[in-house]
Length: 290
Image (cartoon, rainbow, N blue to C red; front, side, top):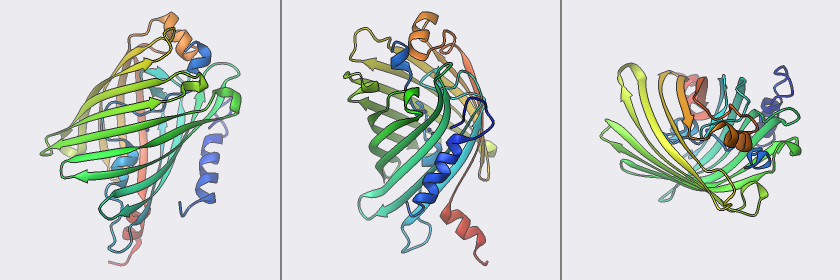
């Protein structure tokens, strides 16, 4: 799925992310829409999941750190732009440890620049923790993610409990489902739930196609719920992934203005992304004598 200042010159988000890495390397009215709903799309799996499973490649050393950086022309989450259609730089770091009989416990720190309108530009910093486990072709992931913003006035912070499931059908295609539940969405005192599902089909030469749909529910009867959909194609080459994705939603201009701060922020949009992902174990293996 994770800041920059008013221009696009100084990568504040990246500096924040690097600060966190260095500090722990062994580790909807407009107000409602200020919180950028994180990029957990209804397809499978996320970039960090792809890199970090399996995490431990050396027997007896179950600890690993995955990390990566991505550049995109737009930060779209759940069918809504979180960057006013402007380019973003995103990065993450994910320390993890294999726990016998339980799976992989991890902490993920992800960051991106966001733009919700004049005076509301800054960084989104997501901190997540969870446990992954595989049962043959079935992969499960459950945990909690909290969305922070800098400066604080960009958006109220809040958290979501999440559960993810992916099932691989003999490497022919993978079906995924996602549920995210916010007990106090945008510090409004009301709950919100995002449910999504999708399918990914691998193609020759490391290509894959995918598509998915999702729906955002709100406890607040005055909030604008939305149906969103996505489809795309990706190409992997070593540690680099090229991704071209289409997004859409059923929010009209008035509803979109209330949700995102932009009347045109929820229509049909294209996101082109290039990302580089690796892990400490992969670098260690690459550097070791053959």
